Image (cartoon, rainbow, N blue to C red; front, side):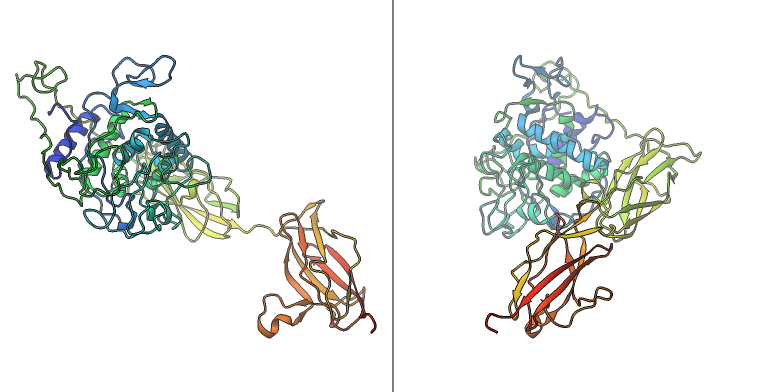
Length: 601
């Protein structure tokens, strides 16, 4: 096996061989769930062009070193030591992640573990992508809020070696009014940040709680990247879902190899370093130079060096010099240096054997646990979550099986994180319980379907019902002023002259429907009056807008239970008239309206 893996990737067979060897060495001792091979046996179909995060832009192709991330003997992590009085770990240079950037990766993992626990997003995957895309925000060059000190821009996406994406943000994020650039520490293209996503509102996120969604802020960018990787109900502990997620970020096998290599490396251990002191990678892939490119490294071709291939769109273009080729491993009895490289007297490093994946659980059936029917009122949470038990052929519980819960039908009920599908792993008792399900505002029926991931077994359906919210109640109406209401015939009462408050059991009643009617003064049989004060026809246009209307049924109290009636007009009739206000719960209020003759009439 080659002794050094810090060499740069090359386009084609050489890059694949180096990446495969590096990842095999890095992942040999990993726990189940870590990538065991960089070569996907069945590469999924390419995602739609508008779903790629970075637009196939340039990225760093440096691989992690072969040796362990940090020297043995520390206490803050595998092989990490701590400098006295600083709280900052020390160890292998490439294992150091800038403090603020590391905090952002871990904060995003925690947020998604709460909103989408079935995704099982590890922060090390975000770190691997952040390393490859921007060198951890240019070595941690961020302020105290996590915003990059200088813009991190990928090359112009003008179709010259990369995707062609005409400007979608007016240069708001990338400063280019002609074409888009990948932006920020996680290299989002503006259209993906602001307009992508399953709901069309963009993948942008507010990770630091400042009320803004900024792709140049490492907290916002990492949380958005986490949601993107988890999209579509992916379970990132499943190798195929993991690879699909990475390829959706940049559809390139070399990109997949590189990210998986760093992912495996960070799983073995990392440590925190001060912001601005992170190790900077050197080489990008692709053929574009962009407007600065991801900061922290020389732009491709800037020093005349050959550009490594790997984006799947740009070719390697030799410059003045040629990158070193990976050295062949020494044969039996050959000499090696003390670090395992050719030239010393050490023995060759044996090729580790990847740990075979665990055999799948013998799941043969899913059984419903609890009621089949789930009911909730609009805007509230369902009391009982959907739950199933995974069983084998003998009816015994199966632990560690992946179960996906999917919402089927027309509903705005959602799992945490506004998700319509989540994946849950069964426990020792074989139970898989979906996270809390919240009913939306839309009443109606839908289905929650539980399926076994990767197994052909009958699905289990739950009948979901969302009931409409009960109409708000009011048992009393009262004017907010005792001022006498008087107007002149042929004129109008003061604007908003009548204001009332609705209450229920002494408390303000919001959202109560109120009917207002100008009625006759017959106390036994008050009916709509054909003369006297009136409202104008609401919502009418043209000649109908001034047509007298003496009954309004569309009035509703506000959040404080208050209602101001529309302007009241008068005709030629004078005298005392009555305005009657009622609610569906029987609350009644009668208001006197005095209409006087004009002066001198």
